[in-house]
Length: 94
Image 1 (cartoon, rainbow, N blue to C red):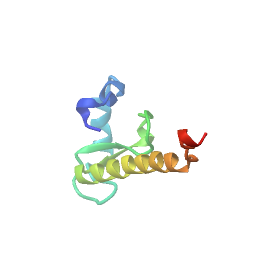
Image 2: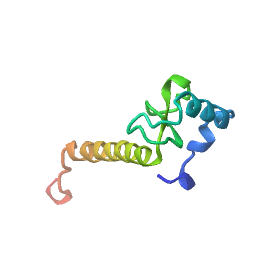
Image 3: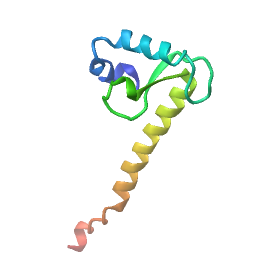
Image 4: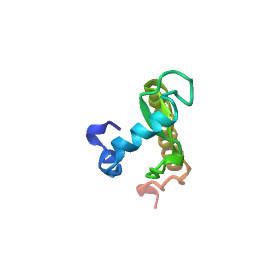
């Protein structure tokens, strides 16, 4: 989901820019996944927990990969849930 169609930005706390800067400084702007220069802040556990314990510095490529994996797993789960439903009887066979 792109930022243009997401309400995620509106759900961020009012002090997000300052909080983001604190996390980047705390983590020495080092990606917690690969160790490269971090430019973004990741919510480690999904959802709206914006506490500093749930935030870590991350580079853009690792953040995109993590978000893609999380989105893909949600899509797979929805697809599998649909497949587990029993098939409906054909209307002509009722």
